[in-house]
Length: 287
Image (cartoon, rainbow, N blue to C red; front, side, top):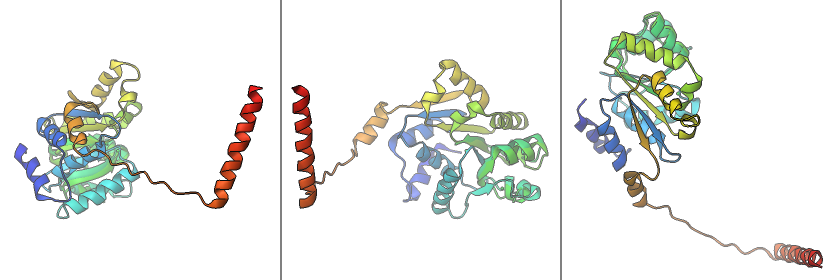
C-alpha cells in the first residue's frame, strides 16, 4: 500500500484527523513489523484506530487480537462510521466454523480472539499468506473470513481455525495486537503469530501498548521477550516528552475554568463553627 494512501484516508474523511506525529509515525512504519509503546494519555487507541481505518478494505484481511468488550465496542462503532462500505466484523466462538473460513477471505481489518485465531492457525483454516499483519490491542466463522476488511476475533477461535485450516491464511494481510504488554502473560497470541509466520511470511504484525512500566519492569530483557513473542523486529517509543508529540499537544493546551460558588448561609455557619473548633484545638495543643 502506497504511503500516499494513508494521507488520503485522513483527508477524505472529516470524522477523523491525523495528528502530525501520528501521520509521521504511520508513514515511517508502513511496511514494518513494529511494536508501538506510548506513554499514558498519548492516545494509543487513536493510533490503533488510524491503522485499522487504513486497513478497512475488502481487498485486505486484517485480524485484531487481545481486545476487551469495551475496546471492541469503541473500535467497531468508530470504524462503521468512518467506512460504512467495509464495516469491521467480530469473530468469536459464537460464529460457526464454516462462516469463519469465508470471513477470512473478505480481507480488511478483522477483530479476532486469540483462542479462535490460535485454533484456526493450527488447523489451517486461516489463509496465512493473505494476512498482511496482526495487530494486538485485544466470528459466523468460515463465511466471515471471506468478507475481508477488519475482523475482531478471539484468540481461541483463531487458533482453532488456523489449526484446522478453516481460515484462508493467504488472504490475511496482517494481524494487529492491542494491549501488547498483556502478551507477556499469555501463550495463545504468540502461538498464533508463530503459525501465521510459518504459513505466510509476507504478512505484517503491528502491536500497540500504552503501559511501558510493565514492559520494562524487569529490565530490557522483558522487551526482548515481548519482541520474541510478537515476532516483530522494530519498536517505536512515543514518550510524552518527545519533541514532535510535545509540539502537537502544546499547540492546543488544555483550558482550565475555575468556578467559585458561595456557600448557603447555613453552610457558612457550619464552616465557621468548624474553624472555631479547629483553632481552639490547635491553641490547646500548643499550651
